Image (tube, rainbow over all chains, first blue to last red; front, side):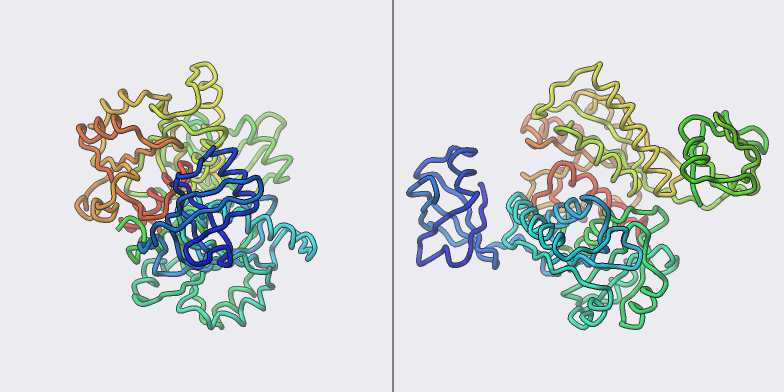
Length: 247
Length: 247
């Protein structure tokens, strides 16, 4: 069943009001009619089966017929702190990361980032990434839209590592300790940070800072992954390890 | 160290001859000079450290200074049989799948494929996918270039399933049996087939045929993955499960 995210304020009592781009999608793309059903999520984790009652040009109204209690969200939350990659790779990272289940993306300004950080441009890009996250969350049948954090400097991230149960850093320089070993040592981790360097990798000084803050460098094996692939692969392994993907 | 694949016939005794596009890459892009070293692979699993001796416009000569014995290849081989997706998604599938370690890709003509199968066009696309696989294998530091099989019909694939120790089919209709359960039941599987449907999914009749041939439908969890993501995620889980990725 088609899934749409609305603002929590768009749900009152048992009525739902859908506005914005989704109206066009429901009326013109899906050509739905009154009486048909969709799933509506408030983006905070609540999902409802909704029967459409009135379809207009600028809004679609519906009534809640069932509160959905089974959540597709993982019990292990992952934040991906991603060194800003070149071109539009961040779009792929957000889309694929959202599909697999990631909760939060933090674009990181790192020593070896090729892109020049530009606050004004980043705001526009961030809006675009948030839109991609919403669409991917709908498509993946998620109840939550991952948040795209404000771009941070590496230093800012370092002072925020306390909020995680575990922070892993896939790093070419780490040859011995595998991700699996680290996860096995943290059976109760509920909020995991994954830190991925940009195309040029993580600078030595950054690895030292991360280590000093308790982050753990790990290897993802002998095959070298591109920056836009590493976070997705690490997150997939983490979900699989904790039984949150494929049983 | 930069890595290049050559035909096995380009390696004789301790001499290596590099021709084709890689010459331009070595001379113009990397601006390498005589005395510098690269890694040369024959695509059959052999890798050598090679010192460049003569750099010309159409060929680069070098001598082998070390035979590399540590292989980055997985002990578990994966073939991804992929229902032909729309647009250029197959390029992403081949590139990312090669990075993670997949050995063979089979483009599949399936009931719900949107693209019209066109033999002439497919030959051109196949050459392009093979080129992408070569470049991704070099970048990922692999010793093998995955092969891109000729496009097959679903029926043809079905008659070839005997060659696998295990064939898994991530399938939305399978709610109970997770990938992990199936892998745990096959601790000695060495060659695993992963069958992924196109955007529209796998048709009921196809699932029935696959089941009859011994393939096992599995769930990858409650979050629905796009066709271009599912194979990569399934392969990542398989490598992780068998200790072939991140320890």
